[in-house]
Length: 67
Image 1 (tube, rainbow, N blue to C red):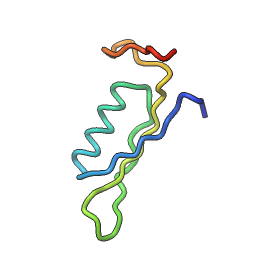
Image 2: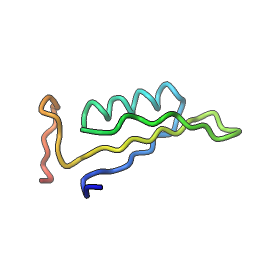
Image 3: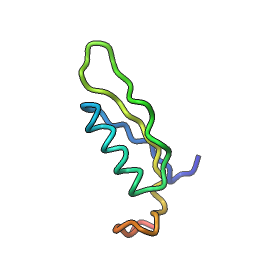
Image 4: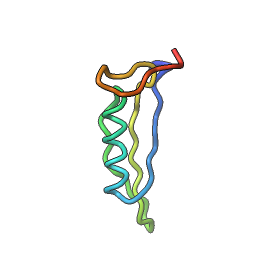
């Protein structure tokens, strides 16, 4: 795995967690968001996504100032 690939864990209500993962996917080259995982007795879910933060898609409004 590249030194520029990070794993992001998003916890929250399922619709919000999935939407946040989709938005991260639009900003960075990334894996597809994982299936939301539930913990017994909790309302929130966990969604994991891997994002490569060393480079950005050409259409991103952000610039890579760390490289």
